Length: 110
Length: 115
Image (tube, rainbow over all chains, first blue to last red):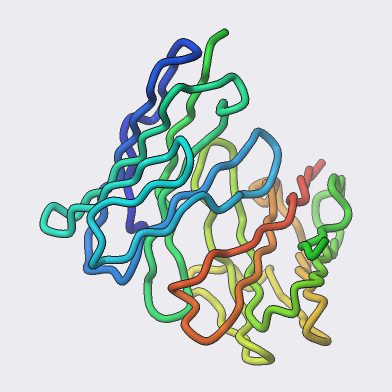
């Protein structure tokens, strides 16, 4: 089953600009996580936000969560070429599983 | 460094020829997952182990099997690969207990090509 849907599917910006990706989900959650995947590689955990949190920061990352709208956003500030990757949100489904969204492909142009 | 290792990184097999992908971890996590990821798609959970307990997803084809001989190792067996099974296969682990609150650690993946 697919829980999260992400928007946009692809995003291309200039280096130094901010990038915003959005995730919507369907059922209640305990937490929402964001992962990054470089081309041809595994996923790397970026940040987890709990259902009782509204905003969380980690370095250049800012995540917000609106449980009333069942949505989350990931903001990457001052983007760098190394940020080029796919970004996935993931929500917990049951006690042992995560369900991933379709992902946003982010391209940072030098 | 503690990590999740997948071998091989690239695997080529023939249509119908059984293939085994392996995953090992040094994190001592008790939960291990196998995902299938096709191009530009989300990782799709095939099955997972919570300790020795095997949990199969309802829509995972019977063609896919898994073994976990000990905490560190987990194998994915594809008994008769079809062209549609060509994908990236990702192994992930998590510290058990309240799994949903913990980040998953992923291996680099095995890219499977079926000729």
